[in-house]
Length: 322
Image (cartoon, rainbow, N blue to C red; front, side, top):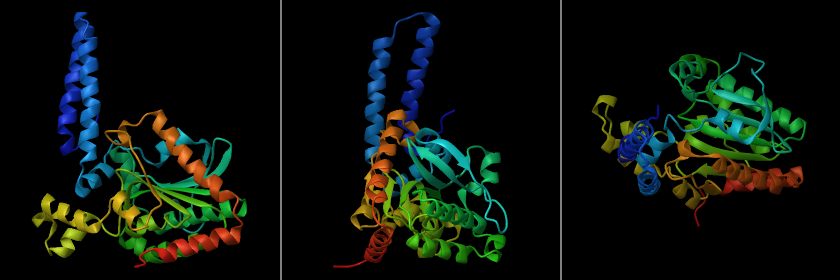
């Protein structure tokens, strides 16, 4: 059953109307093809209109849409021969991050990404995409294997942030994130990054240092969530916060792809189909695969020293003024 956000209510109503017409047509043997086609066209236009006018807070909600594709969905749609590798060789395996090796057509790659989980049981097992330090250490282990065997790295970012629990802090959460930043900056193999949903704080950045950074049109990337930002700025507890507070916080955070491209934080914004990625068909995934392949082809021929030097220059340019 499809899930709908508050601003998608007109879309939900029209989809139900179309479904009822189809059921009536099938059950009564009445030809309603023209009427259904007219409403399908109206639905497409409505999706486009609604999603073109999203506010930053609504984009945040769209980035969290429960039907939105996750890392394993992108791997299934765009890659073949995925072989998942587990464990950080220090503590254990973290299901919030999936990692391994696969192929994009004939190109072998290492692939790493956050995985939130679909149903309640899976979400709990994957900790809602919030990684522990062993998750980030696992990710870096795969990156180092990719470097050793000359494989480029593709990462998918989709997390509200790193897990802030006591166990994670005891096992070195901050150190694991910082070490990933340090090592990814020097990794002697191409790294292409795609923000597919939420890009939350250091938990996202620990997979986010690379040569090309792309964001899907209805994803977000920020140092803190709008809810966390609102609680700090307006000094309220959770029960006292409203959607208006979250909306104001989202506005000032400048977390949308268009803002981040303007600031030079990302390289490009990838358009989504009308209605968001949860309505995407095979053509959208093929197009996205083409973007990744083009980036990897541009980067693969560079000498390693030049690759690392350009990555360093890119990082140093972030936040520069003038």
